[in-house]
Structures are given as C-alpha cells and as structure tokens.
Amino acid sequence: MVEPQPAPETLGLREFADLLGVSPSYVTQLKREGRLVLTEDGKRVRVAESQRLIADTRSPTKAGVAARHAAARGATLPGGGEEGEDSEGGAGTASGARSAIEEALSTRRARAQAEREEALARKALRDEQIELGQLVPADQVAEVVADATTALRTALENLPATIAPQLAAEPDEDRVRVMLSDALEHMLEDLARRFASIGRPKA
Image (tube, rainbow, N blue to C red; front, side, top):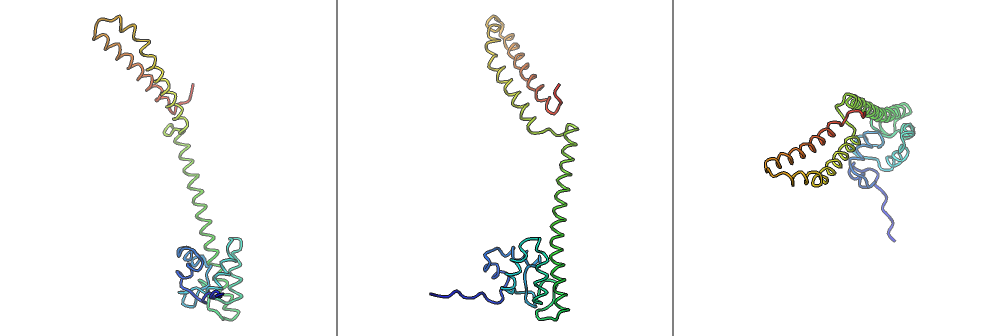
C-alpha cells in the first residue's frame, strides 16, 4: 500500500488552490481577507498554517481567532511581521491580522448597507411613480388586458347574430359597408376605453 505524500510546506497561490480544490480567485480572496499565512516575501503560502487559519476563521464571528493564532505563531500574515519574532513583533502581527479581518468585515457591512439603501430608494421611487400614475402594477395591467380581450372576443362572436338581420335587409352595398364599419369601430372604441382605464382607480 502506497502511503500518501505529505503536503509541501509552502505552495504558490495557484498550487494551494489546487490542493484545496477551489478556484484561484477564492484563494486570492482568502489572501485579501487575511486568512492565509504567507512566506516572508508574500509570494508563497504556508500550507499547514493557512489550512488551520482558514478553518478557524470560517465564520465571521471567529474573526479574532486569526489574530490570536498569528500572535501565538509569530507567522507572516498580510500586514504582519515575520515568523520567529519576539513578543513585541508577535503583537504587531496580531494587530495587522486583526486590522485586515476587521477591514474585510467592515467592507462587507458597508456593501450590505449600500444595497439596503439602494433597495429602499428603488422602492420609494416605484411608490412615487405609482402614485403619480407613471407606473402601473403588473397584476393590474394583466387584469385589464384579460378583461378587454374577453370583451372583444365576446363582441366578435356576437357580431354575426346582431348585424346579420340588418345586413340581409339592406340592398345598398355602400350602406352595408358603413354598418360593418360602425360595428367594428364601436368594438375598437370599447377596447381603447378599457385600456385607458389602466392605472385609474376603480369607481
């Protein structure tokens, strides 16, 4: 039986993404959020430490965990110092990690607040347009269109029965055309009247 090879101590961002089975953009996001432990030059990922840090900071409520881990290890984090520093350097690393995480959380809260405010602004504009008659709710439009379509269909179906006796008794061809035209015009006027009622309060 072949024993699995241990993970290397450090990897590039793309190789670390392959190790986790995630996209490189997700690893870039982890780096931006201060959830990776990097080498001194900031170009490679310390594998074991980063995996532990990712697991410990998986929930925003554990944001302080990253800072505590960094302080305990003295590891390199975005905004922090180098591995192996004394207690003063470790405190600086913890502070940098905490600042990066707090900044990421603050950005998320600001984005969520902006989205809420934008949604409220759109709702206020929509309500104002409805009140001014510039915008009509879709269900009201659908109701009027359905009613107008039903009325037009009924009128067309009844047309032969209502006008046939009159046409049969009329010998003048021009008069027949006028009668048909008047009947159709009446239907179209009724249809236009129904459509014009869209957005108006019902009596």
